[in-house]
Length: 133
Image (cartoon, rainbow, N blue to C red; front, side):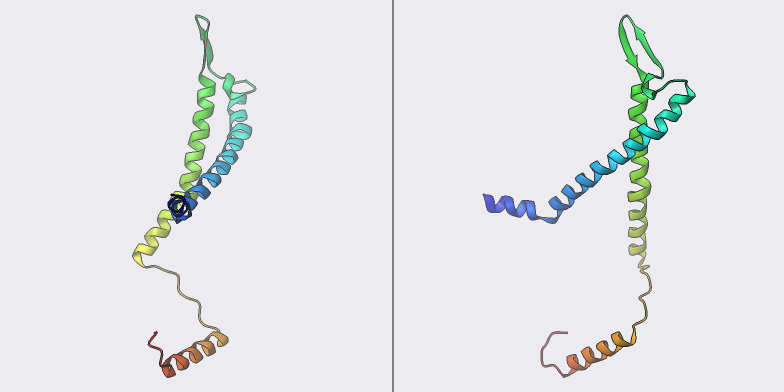
C-alpha cells in the first residue's frame, strides 16, 4: 500500500501540480497586492472614499449591502485572470504553435572545438564494433 502511494506521489504530474499550486498562490498574492494598493485606492479616490469597499454601499431594513466589497473581489479576479492569460497562457500557446509548425530556432554554428569533438565522435563511431548508433 505504501509502495503504491509512493509511486503516485513521485509521478511527474503530482509534483508539477504541487509546484503550480505554490507558485499560483504566490502569484495571486502579488496580483492582490497590486489591486489592493494601487487600483482600489485610485477607484476609491474617484468616488471620494478612502477604500473601494465603501463605494456604493447601502442599507435596507437594517441589512447592509456592500457592493464595493464585491467590486473589489471582482477586480482582483479580473486582474489575476488577465495576468495569467497574458503571462502564461498566451506565451505557451505561441510556443505550442511554433512547435506544431516546426519553427524551431536555427541552431548556432559549431565552434572549432565542437567540430573537432564531432569529428572524433564520428571516427570512433565508424571504427566501433558496438551496434549502437
